[in-house]
Image 1 (spheres, helix red, strand yellow):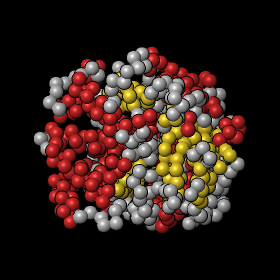
Image 2 (cartoon, rainbow, N blue to C red; image 1 turned 120 degrees about the vertical axis):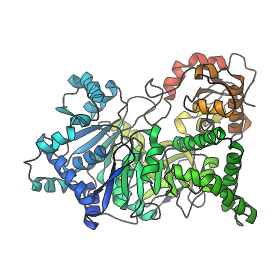
Image 3 (cartoon, rainbow, N blue to C red; image 1 turned 90 degrees about the horizontal axis):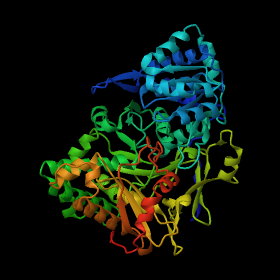
Image 4 (cartoon, rainbow, N blue to C red; image 1 turned 30 degrees about the vertical axis):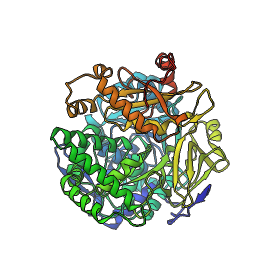
Length: 604
């Protein structure tokens, strides 16, 4: 199979838009809770649909009073919090186009988005964000005003719009149709300047209602989900809309470092996260078990979970003895891990990168089925996802209704459907390059099995070609090595080199727990990079990763770098992807050093 398109289950009227998604939710039961707001101390305050809609209207009136016209761009620069969702729906109610800006963006990045999107009014979260904007405001001629959430910005909008009539908001809410622009999301981009993907009301609304229909056991009325990924990214943004469409209660949590506290208190029924979050949960649980002298029990329980989950995919299923072991492990380990995630979640959706077969089986074994999916900014996040009743761990599932996929002769994944963006803002050349007729070129490589399940095998532009002419997809190796508790980042290299190598950075958060677990004294990452036991553990991690590839594709040598790769130092995009071209340029000396002595000394 090399092409498949799934018909829509729900077709929206051409004249509908994002405002209708909210209106239908509120009309169904105005008194039902739509959002819960955190007090920051473990408490949550419910907000009814009617109350939220009233706040949306009040803020939309403020935007109108501030001179925002239909079609104008309104910028939002903030971490994930309630006010972001409020501003999103208020902008749509005012007929405007919300444009997200990552809270971690530099002044130069902010200036580019403000000018390229012609942002007229910008709402930022903190005075520090406002100061960043002030550095470049003179070079953003369309920008008329900046409001700060933490300094009463929302209240200022409400006060400004007090005299705007309700009829004006009702009129503006009806202006857009499915084909009209809903938002411009700037791809974080691993190369070059970010491109603004123009996503329509139809992209979000049609995909959301079809996803709800396709996966009703997860996205169900009465469910709960906590948003903690950045709302500047398309994944969280789509989940925001999906929750409204599904009838589930939405919560917000802005600090990834304390997200377990949010999960424990909010108690979601489904979780949406990136693979790194699931890796951290596993590694933290392992280290906690070691600190309590229960490491052997944890490892036995983890192995049992993986074996039990794999057995589910066999004709006979788990044996009687395996079921007994699984029940014991549930009482000793799994129930405690589920409690860390709030105790109610039975499903999670993972996107933004490969989760890994072993981790997928581990979580399913402990009672949390991770449904891995795939998508891009240009596809409004998901194009495919595994389903509770149709899962193949290691794949990214089948196409959602209204979505189509085709494999090009070179294996590149091509997409079309209700979710595909209409083009890059102010960039017709890039738009033309991105399409092959009606099909969008993803740049990713994959395979389709006979059941329509898609597997991602690599990134077309990141394929490494060794001196011997061997093509190597680095993601297969990098993702497996990065799952180790010691590892923060891993970059596989080897273009025009005699063999594949890797450069690794240590995880400053994971290091103390690993050292304690192995009875070693405290060390800084700089000290640990030369420690024999740390190097031996990394060598073993590389060896395990090498089992996933052929010998010609395997890592023969690696080195540990000083420091880490971060958004702040320019080596990571906001969604944690390595800016490979920048890395290869700046670490050319370290890469060369791997090949100074061509004897392969590590990574057996």
